[in-house]
Image (cartoon, rainbow, N blue to C red):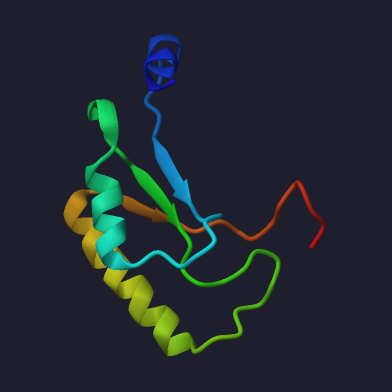
Length: 96
């Protein structure tokens, strides 16, 4: 798919790997492994992670824990040259 897009899209584009719909929260160690093991030499620009909240719902857990998780993810991703992608929580498949 990447090679197809590269062939036909003449302007620069970013590649996002999305794990925000996984059933469990992603941890920093997993995040690092995911970013470095993309096959085919594709550079990952963005990664969407399950950081412990559910789409269309308010975050009901400790905000300090969320802050620490985001700080840790940002540190790891920054060192890899990857941006964190946090989706808005809207979903075309279901109504919020």
